[in-house]
Length: 587
Image (cartoon, rainbow, N blue to C red; front, side):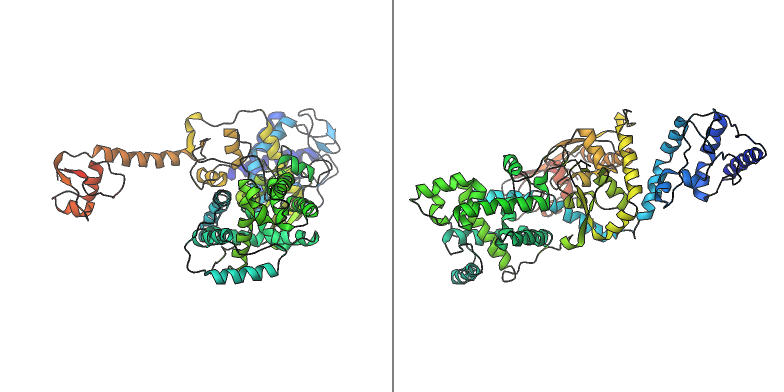
């Protein structure tokens, strides 16, 4: 600090000398560079003003005025510039200007401090660690494809097989289905196939359906709003569960994408554009409106909502052929045997889903807590290109939450394209902060993009690289947090174009703190090495009897533990089978 104050005193002396002259002060390149780099941090921290107030030329403006991001945060930023050639002693207005290379160096050195200062303006109360752990567990479930896979697998397994579920009597089911039929335009009637699907859901899928009920708190209000605008049955909202399990980034094996599973040509026909940056099939509002348009079109052709559902899944042509093959029947259950196998299970799953949601309380289903309510979010039209990662870093919002709220941006980047109005959806408590500091946020984003685009090699030692194997429940945000890196870095290191991961996939990662990873791995290796090194000679053999356990067997031999027996026999767990022969080590 004393050293920095000395530099400030030196600079002030030069300025004082300049005020006695009529000409612009000439300071050498070396003096300017060394002095600025030395006092820069002190000026920012102390907010010390170094400025000439007389009418003579100014050598150095207030550091806070020329600081790029604080400049953007001021309501009336100064218009003067400090950039041209160094040592030329040329005037620009009333300021001596510096070499652009020097100023670029200064700005590059302070980018981290710029980020810290901008983030400080947006900082909220620190998150509660316990609540954060709960959120992380919820996100792992939310971004897994288990729900989507479950629904898809069920379509191919529909049958009239009797499911034992005594909690739901047949006469009770018939009565409830009748009440459901009375309040919806769908033909909901009892039949063995529908009963089998409903009981399968109640018996085997309670946890999955409770998770879907939690997600429904976010999606259903918008669905109902759009369905009402198109004068459609509100129960059609359950179709998104059948199609995608409420996963806006779900993608089928044939390429159908989004909440409503549009194929590329059908999506284009319905006005959903797909580009390198944006897939509107995953956009909540646009894809829902497109689904409403398409379903209305199907209904106008067949005049029946059950057949409209079937045609949404298999196409109008397949439904028309099934009607012909059935002898002209226009009832879904009569033409069902003539539909493709997947479509044959489509309407029963839809109606079973409707039943479970409508009678959730009667079956003691308790929806998972919703992370977001739709009315607690809002959108901001983006004026300059920005990444979700920038927003995540500045506002301390989990990247997975931003991806959940903005699923249509394939690379997590919101572009600015002429003729398009792309928006950023945020929890409502962050909207005011974003708007207030919008210019500063865009400036930070632009600087980050420019830094990434420079053709300079990344300073990452190859010896620090690790290979990570993707496990069940992993997603990029979780892996990035584990190793202290950014999602965008993992994607860049591995050439990933999307956020999708496959179990078993190998990722190259350069941890922020490689020494910590090395210590952790070394500890694990040491344990394994110790286990391997601790070898015993076999004293005898023992034949496992019914009811035996490792602990019970170990007690029979002096100086031998259950773990000794387990290690000596290379057992992966404590399970024993009668007749198994165990080698007993010497105590």
